[in-house]
Length: 311
Image (cartoon, rainbow, N blue to C red):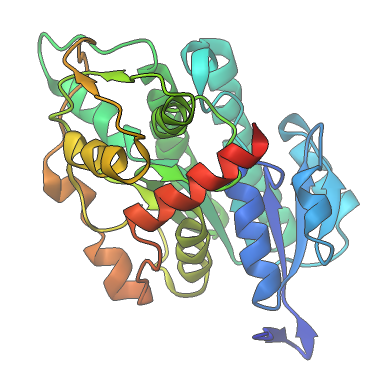
């Protein structure tokens, strides 16, 4: 295990949303690399129970201001993964999404109070989709874009607050994380479940560009962003192999599709198609040396096997 030392002590970090799909994997990665992790959770800490070396701390997002009382150490980094309503119909809940924006902004002040060096936030590629659809006259975005709009708003508000507070803000925009441990109804998870249950999945024409990145690679990327990312910068966190969605889906069908026929074009596509360069991970690779380890075929197999165990 790599040991990180600061003034002769193990470096302390805070992870919000630590019981979530992305947050728990970041906690696991940080612990494995020698950090002392204060893992913040809201209702449940089930995922954290399998990471015995972390320090679970009950702290909902609307109580971030209590952190200086709860944690009596100066964290090197704060990783902000907490976000209510990241999947399903809650993506369309305006008040819920606005509360996430407020909590993100409040965390900047808390980071200053804790004397943390930098704040690393899990953003989304949907921020770029929101910007594109806003500028596209006549576009017909679905209500799910409210989630992306909230992520974008949080980014735009947190950045000037961070500058004023002297807190390095590093923003990692995840393309599409997937893998073992995900319980959400997002597309890839739902598709693999349908394959397991021998139900033919239906899609849009699936010509829009996409990228997927396995969860353990997401966690590694965010640790490297904390250690090596440039201050006040944003990064695309993906595999670096973006291509039309249908290419990924056909690879999935061949790998775990159980001979099913995938149906394309039955669902209308109402979003925008980002150009391939929007998914570029060149800056992430150059600044941090990050290289993904799990390719899509391997990741899909791992996810399929885990989902079968759950069922």
